[in-house]
Image 1 (cartoon, helix red, strand yellow):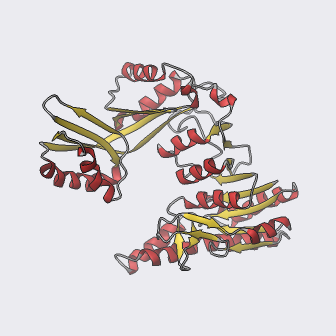
Image 2 (image 1 turned 180 degrees about the horizontal axis):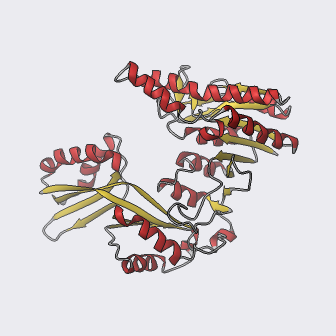
Image 3 (image 1 turned 90 degrees about the vertical axis):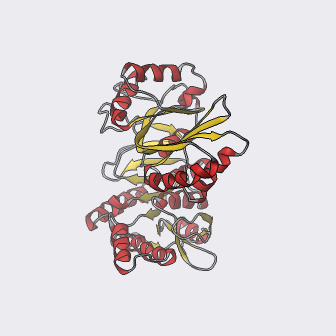
Length: 408
């Protein structure tokens, strides 16, 4: 079996942790598997490097920031390769350029365009271990680029696809994906398996266990991901294609995101293109809009309400202030004390009544729904943030996820 393993910052956060990680890799080799490794920077290292940059310059260029923060992963890769060599294993560290990670030229948020992996495959076939820096690559001009926060997950999936691995193991400080946040619901259960689609929904709704881009890439190329803990070597959660077993579950989990703000621009003259006029400037500012509700009145005016990440609340409000007069709207208002709560499950495709049950549960608990959005496998509501934990607990229990064992 050919495996790509990715280790996050906590898994390589100290010399002791690096030694334990090397033992995990050694175990896979002893079982006859070929192993390539992708590593993040040691915990806290990226923040330390960014702090140094901010001490030097108030506005460092993106190019130099990428050159700086990319060194964090190089330290991890070299140290892990050294420890593997101490164990008698032939291992070699590779930075993004050496590993053949080709990207576009967008600094700080680059995207992988190709992985030139033939030399890495040769190492694997000799049961040698390439230790590759995550989070980074090189553009066509030879500049170091980085993929954005969490980009090591994407690096690992891209490498797994390129070397034709059987699975991509993502090692982290949690032992799998749970039906909801165990800090809110102690009875939350670890899932043995989850579909790519469901994982995308969990990731987009604030679950930090996997980066959204990595799941999208894995789904596109059907690369199974095994999310597991480097601290407790037990089976984790397999993220893979939907199967018949999955489809029998109505709801697989409850997710939430507190990082939300709601904005309404009121009584805009209603005519074709008005939504584009509202959201065009928001998009130009690089702000992602999520839930959108538009109400049309009989008097020819419309209200548009939408959500944005809370970190983008202030700049979006500034944009709305400029648009109100320009578009002939009467006013605008905002609220940065809202949150999203969602129920997710591929079984919604074949089970009716999920929305009605969700709304009834929230009504019984006295939780007012401000906005609703749905997809084939997800129902999301926007509510006051103070009710998040109450809503999550109530929905988790109502959909039978509090059981002692949960199988999708």
